[in-house]
Length: 381
Image (cartoon, rainbow, N blue to C red; front, side, top):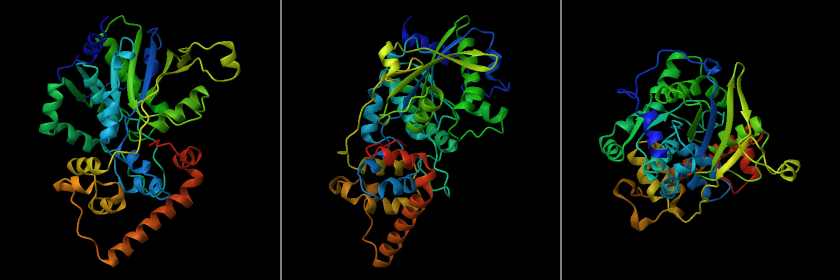
């Protein structure tokens, strides 16, 4: 069956794409449906924070998450997202993403590139792991209201309508209303399975009565995927997950939750050497990024989307001055006049203080810092 039509049917089922489902669904509600779920996790394209960290230096991996809040995709990240062909996922039924901007943008560009006509469901519980120290990790701080505001922008809406993409917050709002104790902003695979997946399944099977094998695609994040692959399938990756990399897993629903099934063919030697795992399969290696992109595009884009604080808007041009093409600075991002020495001293103190917080408190307890320590070339956030 044509992949595009399969996607059109389940995601175009409601006249009101944001109507809240008042029924508290749970995964065991589907234990007798004899369903098989193929779940595909896609890492987002390169974000502006990934780009900033990629410029290198000791301070940048610690300062960037403080200064860059909920970043969009960089220019290269947009190109990466446009290279995703969702037709590599057979018989696709559903497309969702986290409510961080970079995942949302990646999903939209992938849908448009694949020439699908589809709803894009914004989902809770599939965000990136957030460093738990003093609230300084702004990069992974989601804000559903900001995303809703972006989708209501007239210019952006016109683009979505032209490309036949309809963002829907129906599942997000249903989970938030029916399960008030679930932290919708937290990165939590178990909560995704128990409280979010039931609404996805309900929507797909109502659109396709009698269908027994469901194929779902979720745009998520590097550490979310790394942590899950290790916990559920015992996979410890030797390298980081590339931007737009895709992993597949499969399972059946039982009275106790889910039961993973084999989705990957592994020969005897591969199994013995643990170089292949039958329960998880990499479908697409993604696209590795380089560091040639300048920071102009990101500065302008973050200004337009109003995701920068006044302080960050003032400081970022100085922090990344070596990576800004000064001949092509947009009016919205012209560097301010050179600050007085007192301001430079103040900024240096802020930089040192921020670095100390992340170094002292996070090196031992933060998975992000640990991962970057083991893989200095990685840009996992």
